[in-house]
Image (tube, rainbow, N blue to C red; front, side):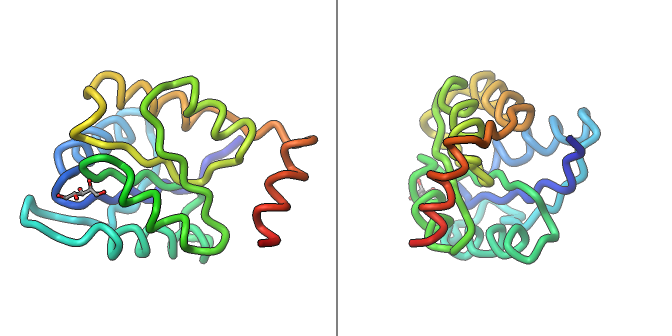
Length: 146
Ligand code: RB5
């Protein structure tokens, strides 16, 4: 499968991991859109989450990665947007399952929670995992109906 574009964003709490993940994306030839934040100054994660979600909903990006201190605020905010299935992951098993079973289109990470190497492993697994469809499609469709 050809991955279109990855939208990536963070608040100040995820700023360092955003830079690390952008390095990973560049190194692995992913095209990406960085929706900020662009400094370590304090900012509001819902604003960034909505910007990233909009890029997916309007088709500019296929998938997104959002990082804040815990990953929780970003996932709550992103999941408010219709069509977004944001998965807050702290392990690779969940990251893979969130793609295979839930067709997650945003990965949320917490810079204050998950170690850097594990976070990069999660990104790698998540980007490479495919949705399995079948019975999982019926369930995802039920989510989208609500
Ligand atoms: C910012 O201090 C912090 O609240 C934010 O990064 C995030 O963890 C919220 O869920």
